[in-house]
Amino acid sequence: MTAAPRPPSSPLRQAAPRSLSALLDHRAAVGPERTALICGPSTLTFGAWRERADALAAGLRAGGLGPGARVVLRYGSGDWIAYAVAFCGVLRAGCVAVPLSDRQAPAVAAHVLADSDASAVLHASGASMPPGVLPDGLWAATEEEVEAKGAYREAGPRPDPDALAQILYTSGTTGTPKGVTATHANLVHGCTLDERRRPLRHSRHFLHAFPVGTNAGQTMLVNALDAAATAVAAPQFTPGRFARLIEEYEVGSVFLVPAMAIELLGSKAARRCVTDSVRLVGSTAAALPQPVALGLSQAFPRAQVVNYYTSTEAAPAQITLLFDPDRPDSPGRPASLRDLRITAPDGTPLPPGEPGEVWLRTPAAPRTYLGDATAGAETFQGRWVRMGDLGRLDEEGYLHLLDRERDVVKSGAYKVSTLQVENALHAHPAVADAAALGVPHPVLGSVVAAVVVPRGELTAPALRTFLLDRLAAHELPARLLFRPSLPRNEGGKILKRELRLLLDDEALR
Image (cartoon, rainbow, N blue to C red):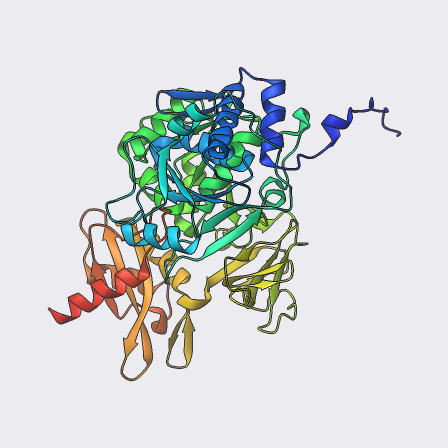
């Protein structure tokens, strides 16, 4: 049967935006009064977003900042509207945005300022840089102060798609944060000017609580510009408040990191809220433990649970893994295997079933590390990015993440996956949170240790007995430490270097 011909679309509908600035122009022209972003009691329409970003861009130019100048954006999770204006204003001025959460330690802030060669700092009202961090000669202001300077000036030409747009710093969980550069074309890849093709069309609102300065947070900012749904940014994450926002806005799409999912599932307050509007639950930033993924599928029975697999270095490369409750041993099956590869150490693709390194291919201009051109030689392989994970694809195309390459515990003749140990720990009903890691051993080289957050009464002997049916002898934690919480960075990733210090302190007592 021949399909009925479709009327020709206008060039505007068919074209992809060349930058986030162009996308903002389009959304403001099509729906200036449409709400783009909600944070707490404040809202931002697309028209106001463009107007304020233009004024800020003009103010930056009036302040002497030319194209390519690096501007650090220091904002908190309650400042998403101010941050959105600042980010787009910096890009519209042709400057380079350097996101930085106001929760970062002063030493990290000083590193970002120096490493990025910043020319200025924009910050939320009442959230200036800590004393002694701002170098002499570097000016700092709120976005409102800069907007006031440029309210009646032209913002200047729109940026070149191939020009540098953003420097985003890695989480620094294993060392000093690295700056990752992205062009305007990289940031806008996958966005559309076609109103009929906007993502998240099943939602009136989508909700997240991601902090500024993370790759997940940047994805939500792009979603606010591109999606059919209105963005709701929780000023801070507490499970009860997060669930109330789902109920209040009848949220259709929810985005979490595993730490938030664990808290949400364990919260009695959250369970009292109506959440049957949710059709999509997306998890990112770290591996979602299997029992937690199953818990989400039960808590949101009308929703598809999705694991988004990406990294700061790989974006916009992203694998969408649709979680199947009947296959809980895998985070999901990718919709396409075109941009995913399991390889040997030399990059040779491996067949299904063979474990190896996980590589992703970016469809846009690839990112790079800031500074030394050789710094990313191991990570960036043309358009392919080594993710630092070990995994395999089974015969049916399901991805199995085995572990972070650096986290694999080499114990005697065995290699132990900390992810597998953590999955077993999370399966215990009295375990609220858990992390596994390797610690030195005089004979075996390393053994597994685990730090556990108990829920109610739990003893080490009872937990060890539970694990005997789920783990091999060499996978069983040789050391167990119970703590009230796990140290995590603001993006929700567990800080295993701090866990090692906790275990060292415990051993000395």
